[in-house]
Length: 146
Image (tube, rainbow, N blue to C red; front, side, top):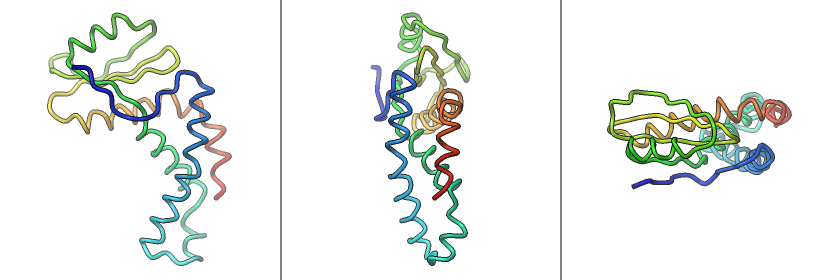
C-alpha cells in the first residue's frame, strides 16, 4: 500500500520558493525559543545565533516537511514506470521497501528494509540537497541576517 508522509509537495520552482519563504519566520521563532531554552542571554544570543544558524534551521524545517511517497519496491517500480521524468535510485534493489520524492521533472528514491523513519529522513535530505538547495541559494544568503 502506497503511503504519503509530509506536508510540502511543490510542483514548480515558484511554489517551492513560496513554501521556503513561508517557513522562514517559523525557523526564526524556533531558533529563538531553542536558544531561550538553552539559557542564552541576550548578548550571547546575538553572538551565537547568526543569520547562518537561522538559515540552517530554515533549510532543515523545509526539508523535514517535504512530502515523501513510500511503499513496496514493486509499488515504487510501478510509479517509476509511469513517472515522466528522471529518477535516481539510492540503495539496494535487494530490499522490500522504497521512499521517493519528485520535483520539477526529477525524482530521487531510496530503498530500505526496516527503518522507514530513517529512510524518509535520508530521502528528504537528499531531495533538499539535490533539488531545493541550488534553487534557494540566493534566498538562503539573503536570510543569513537575523
